[in-house]
Length: 136
Image (tube, rainbow, N blue to C red; front, side, top):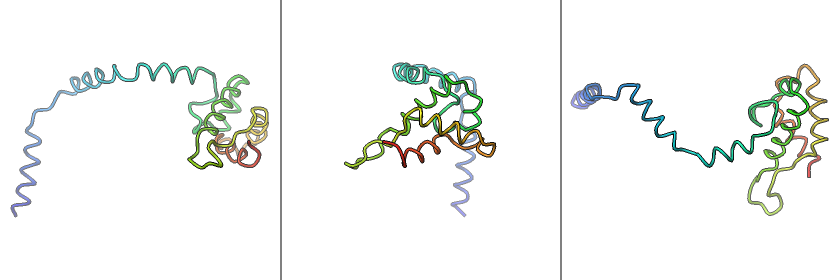
């Protein structure tokens, strides 16, 4: 019985403690976040200064590819090449992922994404699977 009593007393003690009003808590969080990442933010902006069809390499779909302009599609190819060609492990034989030439990747997406059933296909999955067979 004493365990239950102590558990209930603990809950009651937590409720009686004074907490910061929500506005004060938000202000504290904003103050802490304002000093974070000043140099990292500028490098992130430099990496994503090109146009592309979506928000990230992992979420871009064929529907976004079809809706994008040629310039956005080319930007997407750059991002996918960097994503797929990033380091994959510590093996001596394969240190970076396989990549496709931009022309080959463009033709791949034009071909697959033209099909209605492919509208939700993830571009990075198409890219990486094709690169595994023909990439360098």
